[in-house]
Image (tube, rainbow, N blue to C red; front, side, top):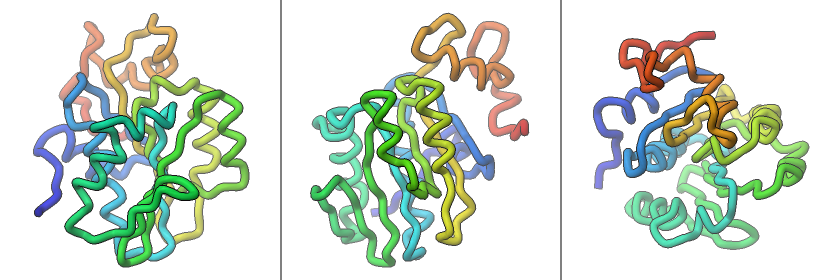
Length: 190
């Protein structure tokens, strides 16, 4: 089985060298799949841990959720899938993928002192701006990988109470009607 991104936005998302990249689009557009492909670039790096966040634990474990999908995707690589003490995948080379959640804003403090060099936030609009920036402060590490963050979201609007802060972050990449401006896709701004 060969794992690779679809040509177009998914491939572009996985190729970017941006410190923070946000991949938006409608449901079933392959955003979570792209997030689960990301840790594979580090399979041979023994000390690298990628951390995949969703707002709630059930969003990870529900049928067809990220935990089910990663087991299907990674099965041919023969990693070790662990459910205790938390959901994680350990690849033969020693790299890891851990699954985490922050249901309440105060849950971010569980990661105080953590190093999260590869930070993957699925459905970032479900997180508050405070939660995002706090987790961003943990986006560090000494594993040899330059820390970076990859986020996904469904389309957001300025007046959306949950995603308005994300809209303000990505508004430069949107056209006048609020859709992705394809001419700016992948452009690193800062």
